[in-house]
Image 1 (spheres, rainbow, N blue to C red):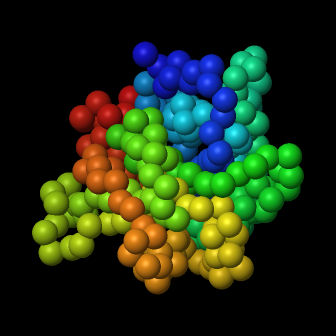
Image 2 (cartoon, one colour):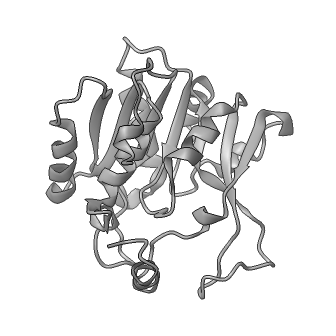
Length: 232
């Protein structure tokens, strides 16, 4: 069963999805957004996972200068499927400034959609190649202000480093109003973790998933993923 076939006839949920796909992949040496999984570019694959959660809208942030990434997303947007929510592509003209810029641009795009009632925002990247729709749905079943993914830190040989704390991060669900209050303080490539640390413990929930430890940043990681048949 494809991830797209997981979308049912039920009404959309009260969430939006932001896909952060504007990284320049300098260490990898090629756009990670266009690596193939099950015959699809990763940015398409992650968009399909997002669609499976039945969001009201999806915002995909991509680097402005990469026409190939834009072209593959246009293929999804043009598919005739009345069940699909609005998919908006946002161009980041300065992706080198870090993730915060992409996230702020996506929040602006959500604010502009005045006809939607959004209570939560699911934020995902594109390089956690073992991510599945079921994990995203589990995040959305919790009702805390923040519901984050939790997974071990891997060393350079893809072994869990016991001396490092678990990573608490993407994919993550954040209350929409709370995310808006954080927007003005977003900067650089810090992400959301420094905001989450100051929240009361009862406001945060974690969903553990060891498979999310592996992402694609380097040629070595890419080669390993292909050896394991995680990527085409």
